View (cartoon, rainbow, N blue to C red):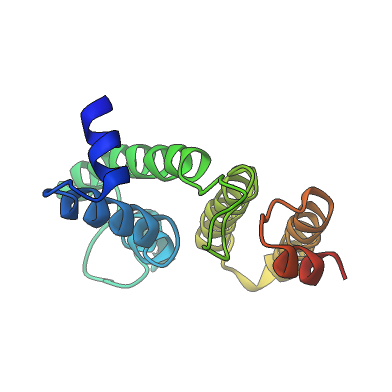
Length: 171
């Protein structure tokens, strides 16, 4: 490990592309691809009543909680747990903490990303299971409270190393 760190610092590391690929893959997974991947697996649990029979909301020919739907939901549940845990751990551990970094998104810690991923996951679950018209004010209140909380955390913690970005958030 020390050789890899030394070689990377000196620029003599020939197999640096796997590390860069992993870095970009983790960044994409925890930012852009988090919600679409999660949406695929959470929608398996979204069932509505049609003629007193629980059917899938998107595929009305699939009866919920019978046959293969149970297997798909169990596999989906375990994948959601593994995927969300992976993304939360990566968001806590993956950040550029060097004060002299040229990366504008360099942060002192990953807590802001962690709390935002938790907020996104909670929103996804709540919007999937409380999608009826009766719950629209509850959904609005939850989104508003979570958004205000995320915004205040970003302002008060000011985790960015870049001075211009820090001043922009603190305005």
